[in-house]
Figure 1 (cartoon, rainbow, N blue to C red):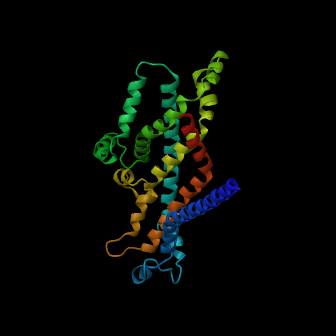
Figure 2 (cartoon, one colour; figure 1 turned 45 degrees about the vertical axis):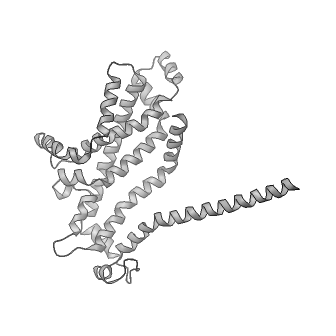
Figure 3 (cartoon, rainbow, N blue to C red; figure 1 turned 180 degrees about the vertical axis):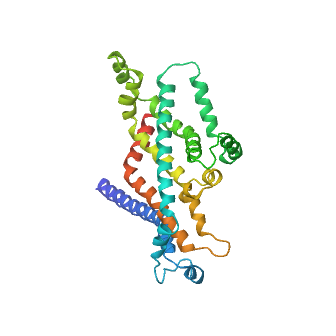
Length: 286
């Protein structure tokens, strides 16, 4: 009887603990989601509502034309397209080059592999702001200022160290037996990489891809420094068009921010399973 009573008491405490846990998670979720809801409501306000009402007040007359105006008159469609293709190209190059480097370091024996890895890790410690002036001078000499290539090269260079560091732990623990069997069968190094090793790293590649995508999509400093032509700007810089010397269209700025958030949310929702799988695989194997 005593053990039965103890079991019921433990069950009661477990239920209370689960309830408290879910309450805590709900509170955290509210704090996480409320800024997005607030930004959406803000994007539907006019300037008079922004300054005349409480920051937490709902829009009295939702200004849906803010979205139409920024897309048709504010060139947001052009900035959006620039952000999409620059981000995608940069992510693909970063993930592919990082996979090349990681494969060479972990699967091939050569004299300066440790030195190369150390150089990449040192690159991870270089602050972005300290590299702006040298990069500007470098791109100016190569005639790459006001050229999307300067943005892509900067994104790839600064994202490679982190991407390599994430891939390293996964590559070190991949079973070598499959690759050794492929070598016995006469596979070249290129075939081993593209047909065997690369598909095995799909989960961790999804994790690195989403991390790179978030950084590239939200990046401001490089675009603002290296790009001057309006038709080459991305969303993060193009939003400045709605900030004037005497008047700022706050509703349009809010609408632009909402539009810029949507692709990141979609990508995260689509790749969330792969991200969790990659993190779990890396933690278990590493």
